[in-house]
Length: 185
Image (cartoon, rainbow, N blue to C red; front, top):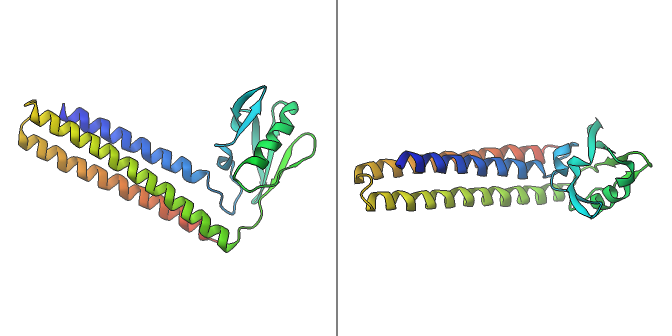
C-alpha cells in the first residue's frame, strides 16, 4: 500500500516535469523551433485545431520557419491564428506557405522570457509539492488506519521527501538550461 502511494506520487511528479519541459519549449529563444507552435490553435472548419495537425514545419535557416499547410484553404486561418498568438511573430503568406522570420531578441525581451520561464518553473514546483502533500496525507491515513506501522510510515515519508527534492532540483536544472539558452546572444 505504501509502495503504491510512493510509486503513484513519483509518476505524477514525472508528469509534472514533462509538462514543465513542454511549457519551456513554447518559450521563444533566438533560434527557430517548431515546438514554439504547440499551443497555437487554428479555427479549422469551425473547430479549434492544433496547428501541428494542420501543417508541417521546416527551418531552412536559424531564424526562419516555413509552415506548409496540408490544406491550402486553411492558409488564411493559420496566418490569423499566428498573428493573434502571443508569440510576437509576423507571418508572411505567399499563397502556398507561410514564412516566419523571427526577429532578433532584444535584451529586454530576453529578460521578459526569463521571467516567464521562472514563473513556469515555479508552477511546476508547486505542482510537485501538491503531489507530495497528497501523498503524505495518504501515507498518514495508511498509518492511522493500521495498514502499516509507524516505522514504515516514517521511512516512506523520508522517501517521499527525497523524491520531492529530486524533482524540484530537476525543475531547477531545466530552468537553468532554459535561462542560459535565452540569455545566449
